[in-house]
Image (cartoon, rainbow, N blue to C red):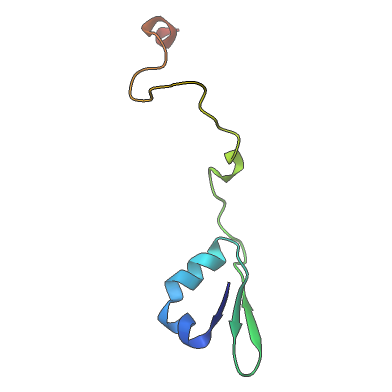
Length: 73
């Protein structure tokens, strides 16, 4: 993400969220560019499963997917 000082001050939450997502944020100033990155971006719980979880067939997630016997085992 690239921004300037005015936008940084006006939209700080947006810039902060981008840095916390792991994006490099470049702030363009008259004196030179500044780089903002998160030191330790928070781990995202489901990001490791991205692309790994798929629905098979026509599964209705509003009803139980196992029988009562399977559930009690």
